[in-house]
Image (cartoon, rainbow, N blue to C red; front, side):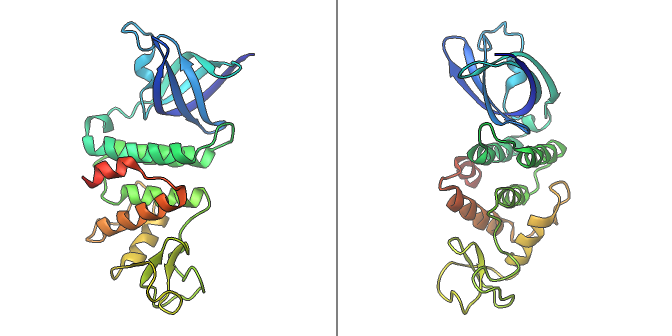
Length: 238
């Protein structure tokens, strides 16, 4: 057992015992880290407020057999502005939930960490771009190796007549390969999704009438490959 310094973005926490809390962090070097913060549920806790979701922190951990213990915390980025906007909090919650679903314990997650950091910084800059969550999820799909095919048929490689999107095939499909399967796409949606996948989260293309379709297709694609619903997106839909 030893002391270890690490950093991470707080994904969530849950009660542990009478006054403690287990904090789940996304560390760029160690993936998903679970650590006990002792006494943080007491009103006089030294650093309970520094361990709220979205906060980027530096931590000093005492390594334990099952769970590490947080002994020191300092805030790197608090993202205090986004916390005042409900739309930002809901969008950030979707990012956190998706990252939490794919991050692994004990495995480096540098790209996932940087993506989440960029997403939170975009929210902090505000206001929420209508396509931000869709762009984030498309980039996350790329990071974990399941990026949808958006420029060519996912089955034969054709680049024309791409009118449908197949979850099982992994992206857009042409009329010859799948004339009746998959979701029929509105004109321009494929190009819009491709632009979102390539754009920086802080400089997305202008919002358009395709934004709602974009998050609909992206959500279904990501949930299909994660094999789970993103509950925070249900709140956004409401």
